[in-house]
Length: 395
Image (cartoon, rainbow, N blue to C red):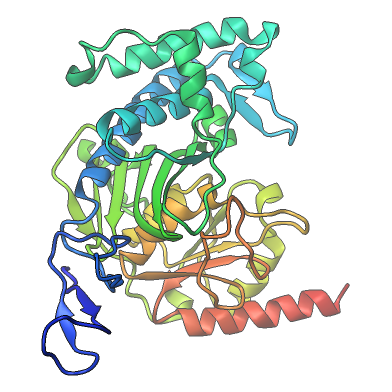
């Protein structure tokens, strides 16, 4: 859906009525300012086209790398970070591929990347064998794209630099790419759901997002069929502000527009929550579902693949309530958030506030994150508040 662009001219050199509203030329982007100091008030239909194309290419190539590693997952591929979550060879490789592709495809733009990994462990003597493996994987993956075949192979130092591009702090000024190279690392290690999640912030707002979900069925997870087409896996969801959300196969089928569930009766709704109990308070989710009268058992799934599945109507609600002391990172939600909102859904914290991605690497939230369609949101918020109050009073 195209959104008209308008601007406010407080001081025009031409005879106009005070505070006249005039149309902005369609080539201006969200953050662009005119020579008159006029703020662009909306998005042009052509804005972010090249950025979205680059993001889709980057996420797809990273997914190819991840699929290769997952098929031959070795015990030595899994390391341990200070927060005790697993880090894989694919995590580092995915980040290097995305970083390289974005820089290559968008050479004229200043490059800022907020991402999960850094190369510290790989620069140690004990990480040299792993670094060699990552470098080979990255070069093999880039070789799958014809335009990069003429590019000299990346050295280990090139790969380390690409990984460390992700050290940006983000913020409310300028453009920042936001990446989780493998969202749902534990799901990846188990052979279950994971996602390569990439988004672009412009002046603190998410303006596009891509979710590559290599293990997610192309057909709805609610459909049961013996047809071979329903067994196909590998989805690419993408959204650009004001233009809706689309899904296609990772191997490049024609995109189809998707929309969140239109369910209005909470009793008919199904909901997603994190697979790992350590990632979300399942008992609180159960209390909320009970208040709503939800009859379906929860669908527990790793990663932002939940956002993708919800954007196409596989479920109606997603609840995430981290344990006390946990701070949500922007890369865990930025891409998923715009994929759902452009599909007609809403994403808020437990108080009903929209998520604010402009404060750096972390989200400042009230208790948790809730996702649903616009018709269910009022009753869901009411149930969330009541359940939280009961939990607090019982302590």
